[in-house]
Length: 174
Image (cartoon, rainbow, N blue to C red; front, side, top):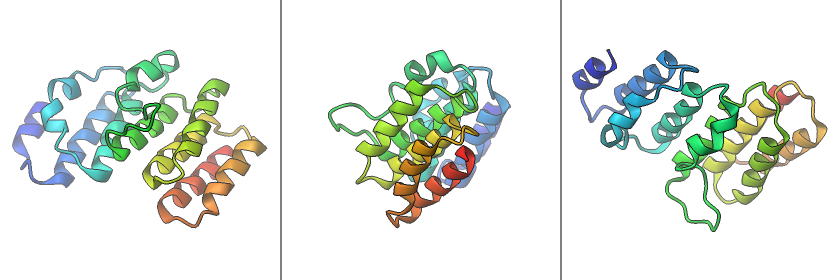
């Protein structure tokens, strides 16, 4: 079905492209079956900006609940040490995907990793956005005051993109 949808849409229409990627994520939620994406990497690479963020985040939906493998699944998309960046949109989407995978499965190591990424991303709103959303999902319903304070600092930086994600995350945490 996805092949038919992919082949019937205009490759220049980013909304339809993104819709097909989201359709795949929802159809494969929690199954770990990302074969369609892996078979169509060239087609997937046409995603730009926020569509790239969403496409990478859809991996979190596909692998939802498979918390032990989260870092290895997302390793090619996660921010690398040393600051060498591929795309802030795919890296931010990977941080969000990590949160989706770990949603409602609190893990101190994942929380620490996402907090570290949030601190390292002070100059990149898209990375902050992904880290905040991921952090909110990992710490969902914990009422963790330290996480709240970290997110509040991001909220108070007065940047729309990161601030919106921080506000959502605060709502998830508290």
